[in-house]
Each structure stands twice: as C-alpha cells, then as structure tokens.
Length: 313
Image 1: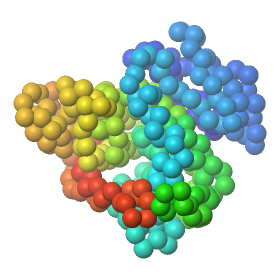
Image 2: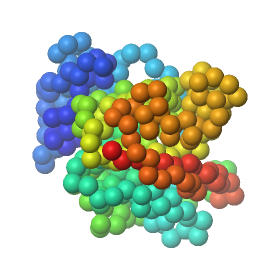
Image 3: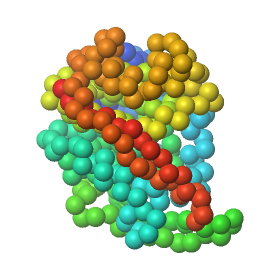
Image 4: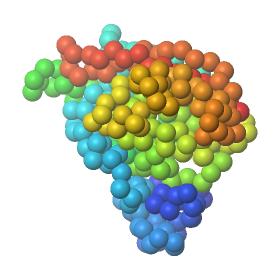
C-alpha cells in the first residue's frame, strides 16, 4: 500500500466517528508498505497489510463479506478480467463500456475513489483524470489482481472456453494509465475507511444491487465526497435479488413503499437532495445507459444495460 494513503484512512468499525489508525510493525519495499498493522486507538481493532494489500473491513456484522465469496473463484476472476480489459485483448467480442463511462468524467486535480473496483479497470481510467485514484473492493482476489496489474503493467490469465478447456491470454496496460497514481484496498463500500470530504471524484459502477444496504453505500459515497467541486458517476443495471438484500432495502423495483418505481429515478431524486439524505445536494447533469458485457465462456455472454447518472456539486 502506498504510504500516502495513511493520512486519510480511518477505522471503518468506529464509523460514524472518524478515528485515525496507528501504523505499527511496518516493512516497506521501494517506499510502499508491504507488511504492517493498522490499529484503531479507540476500539482496538487491527487491520493487516499483507503483501501490500490493506484489508480494511469493519468487524461489525455485514452481509457483504459472505456474499463476496463467489468473487474469490478463479473462473470468476477470469471472467471479470475479460470484462474489464477485453478491448486490450484485440477480441472481436469486446465492449467499450469503461471508455464510455470514462468519457463522462471531467479532468480534476484532486483524488478519485472507485468503489466496487473489481479488477481495477476504471481506477486505471481515473488515473488519467486526476492526481491520484483509489479503488476499493471487498474481494481480496480482485484486489490482488488489480495490484498485480499496478505493479507489473500487464497480466496473463486463463480464459474459460468450454467445460475444462482454457486458453491463455495476456495484455499490457496503456502507457497513458499511470500506475504510480493508483492504489487498491480491500474495503466495504457500505463502510468506507476514509475521512469525510476527501475525494473530488467518486464512482459506483455496477455495485449498488450487489450490496446488502444500498442506501448506506450512497450515504458513504456522499460523506467521503468533497462538499464542493466534486463529481459523482453512478451506474447500475438494478438486478435486485432478495438473496443479496432484503426487499425493504431495495432502492427500486417495487410497486409500493418509499422506493416504489425505478431505482434510477429514486436515486436521481436522492442525489438531488430529496429527503435530505445526500447533502449538500448534487446537480444531476446527465442520465443515460451504457452497455456492459460479461463473458462466462466462449458461447455464453451476459449483455447488461447499466443506467448511469453523472452529478456535480
């Protein structure tokens, strides 16, 4: 983990109190923290950094961690690597979603946060837009893969073709993506381990319908975003499932209740200040859709329409 992150990391277990973590037993390699313990002086919780990966998950009960176990599967990792970087593989089935989303973000001199970063594609995209970009995900496998890309500038992985048949693929990151300007942490998007008012760009792509408490995530995004001169890019297909979140927690897809109707409309209203849950209110500058694709094997793709909104304040 890059040492500069120590300055704005806090204890996620103590939220809403923002308690700075003490750093002990530090081993550094080339200026990066390779091994350490981040200790909360208030609650005593210890968060490890092992092989450069900081694990900053709250010890409070959460449905996020168990539901994330499927993302530790190597075939799922392979599928997400293809989804994130297929356009770098010279694949005729590649999509352009990440470039489409990146075009919606204006250049900025501050720091960006990419929540639910998975294998890191959009975090790397943000390195071209700002001074520094942080990606967080609750999957250790995804974060390990993203940090490997950060350090090596490329990846080699097995792609599922059919059944037990695999093919070897490799790609290099474009030189315009600056790996010195990115870092990746294991963290829960519903309890972000960062100080308030810290990021000038915040993003949430294809994440909110995978969380047990979607509204908590939006509130956390709002908390860590700067109160002025900030951007918010949100996108999701809203594939709600009671296996992930109780229906009372859904932000749309319901016939009645406070979040009846379509989630993109409800979230747009929340972002705009309705119910005073995301203040200062954001100005929603645009809405639309981006087509995103996941490859399960050579004959099975998922084509997903993700609804986005871009807001500033």
